[in-house]
Length: 143
Image 1: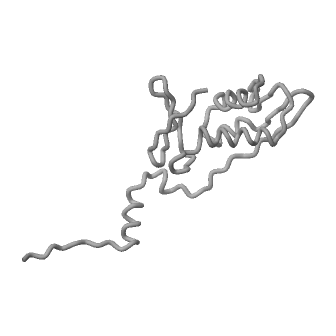
Image 2: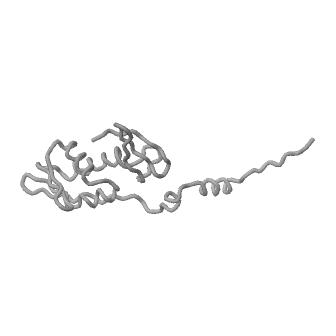
Image 3: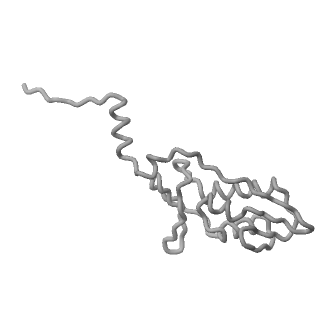
């Protein structure tokens, strides 16, 4: 009877092997994902988000896409002026922060692995949130 040689890995060996299989952008991801808080000022009957483009850049999203979402959520008109957004109407900083969190949850954070390293892709008539970390594609609602 011949004996077969079986390789058994210890936990550390398996962990090293799994780590070697990870994509490069995931291996070196050490910083925590942070979005700057919205700097909201109310001037008369207008609400101004001073750092709107900075927020969109931190999320790695087109400012116009984020603006379209915010305008639909608060049911108002608004314009992008330079690096800020002017909304028609008075909206509390708390409301704006909640809408930003909803955008993050629906259009930025991967629902499978929780990574913020995603992009929005269009395939035919449908839009998907594609995760750069785990490769998952999740259908999202088109704005």
